[in-house]
Image (cartoon, rainbow, N blue to C red; front, side, top):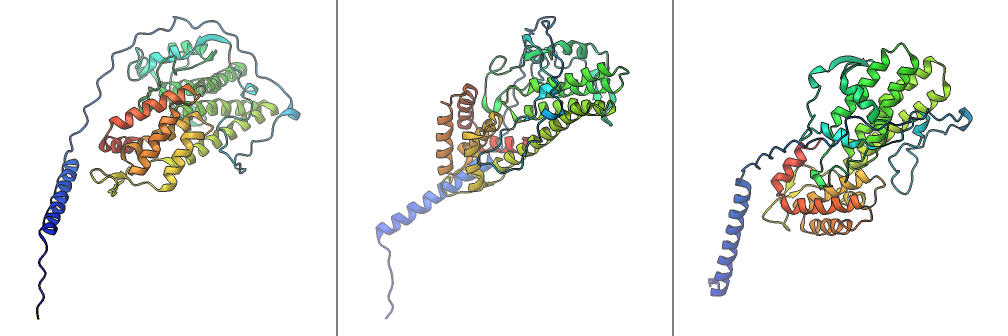
Length: 383
């Protein structure tokens, strides 16, 4: 006897509804993938008029502090295991190499004029740069008597250089940056001039200018790329002071400079290791919790590392890098990751550090505004 199965009317309707739902889902997903329209090009910013005075206020720069070889510290044990991430700061006292000046102005008001996007002097002097050796490597620098190089000297004798929020507001991933190429070119230019100086005192003063500039650049601690440029400026000056001290048999300065070089290299390496652990990969997958858009292909370890960095890293710049990683999970993480990342950013928007708090608010707004395509573009174009 043959037994036949006839589905009920309710089952037929349920099957048809399921098929229709799947068809709609596939069509919606195809539309999401097919819509390849590019984001509109950002509008050009109007040039911002300078607010810097014609001349930097007078300042006094004390000589390097001398403590004697018996008081010099040992190299900081960067690789020694600690329960919390090590603060990314110099552990040797940089006053042993180049104390800051006491100028009352905020040096950022002068450097702001050279901002690439809208600075009124963004291209000033670029055609006058020359190739000169700096520590055995040919670099593009300003000539020794270039007006902008001379103009910069009293500005790096000021005690502070704060861009946020004095010059620019915190805007999350869209936070403005100073002209970092200009800053490091100044440091290299002073080092190049020092390398050809016949007067040892003038050479050392130029190397100290590079160190002071680096110390000023590091004061904000807002973006990792800016911190890396500050480290590079300190390193350029410290390397020059080491070589000068070696020629003069100045053991104390040699030791202080070598400790600064040790710290700079360790900070750069550890920062790179930390940021690598939280970098959101520019790869996507489809996840059942977000069927209409892809999700970033990140491991649970990467997500947890981003949460921890944003909440508690001792470096403010890395905390903000952690926020930007969380923005990726809000925009294109799994549903659970998105909820947790959003809750963390909302909590950080009330952080006691006003720069951390304002950055978290801006980062959350950016996460709600951008789509997964724009996020992918940001990830692919990130340095």
